[in-house]
Amino acid sequence: MVLRLSHVAKSYSVGGTAVEVLRDVSFDLGAGETLALEGESGSGKSTVLHLIAGLDAPTQGAIEVEGTEITRLSDTELAKMRRGTVGVIFQQFNLIPSLTVGANIAFHARLCGAFDPAWTDHLAARIGLEHHLEKYPEALSGGQQQRVAIARTLAARPRLILADEPTGNLDEDTADTVLALMLESAQEAGAAVLMVTHSARQAARMGRRLILSHGAVSERSAAGAGAAAAQ
Ligand SMILES: Nc1ncnc2c1ncn2[C@@H]1O[C@H](COP(=O)(O)OP(=O)(O)OP(=O)(O)O)[C@@H](O)[C@H]1O
Ligand SMILES: [Mg+2]
Image (tube, rainbow, N blue to C red; front, side, top):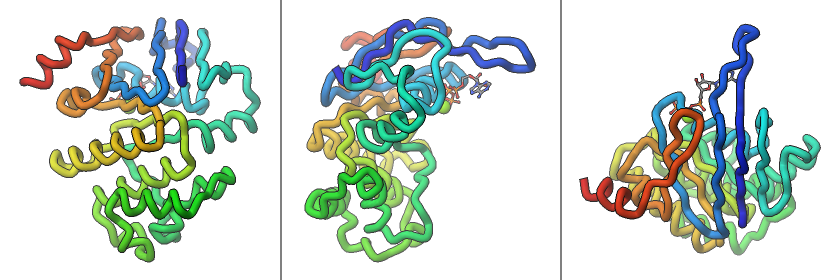
């Protein structure tokens, strides 16, 4: 199991009052599995990803990443996990503007000592940007920039990719292409993917679908997913 959440709760203190966002969230994700996390705006989807990435701590419950209970890790150990085991992809591409496309792709892998030139070259070709490696991010379209962000994440060979509306800034056709590339290259790298999305059409491309509502998740059945995909 790559990821296991057990009875995770999260409250924020707003003006001295505790506001409960997550009440009881439990789910597993196996190696190489793909899972969509859906739910209304404000339901707590980004909060779930932040907790798994160790950017914030749950109020209650346990989060295991590759068998390690992350709420017990030190800040240094969490930072190491974020660079190595877990890769994150956001709606904003967060490329480094002063670095070329090639240097952006290699950046995280170099940071965590996992840089492999052959794998990085392969990923650049996989995302169709092998002829743009000397360019700077500003010279690329949004879809191209997100492809660079995907290659950058995969270059460090994470076991788990957390993606928060990765195609939310892209038009539908570009979003489809970018999602397909993300899923194909994650599969090739053996990485599991947990993706937050508002799009039923995109969620239907994932192996499983979870709906977050009132602080808890429920699994959408295969029949439900099929019906949504057919709409
Ligand atoms: N640091 C924080 N302090 C206080 N409240 C917060 C904090 N972060 C999130 N919240 C609240 O938690 C709730 C869930 O936020 P979250 O960003 O996880 O929702 P979401 O499902 O990702 O929404 P969206 O689809 O709009 O991105 C919201 O009501 C938000 O205001
Ligand atoms: Mg969000």
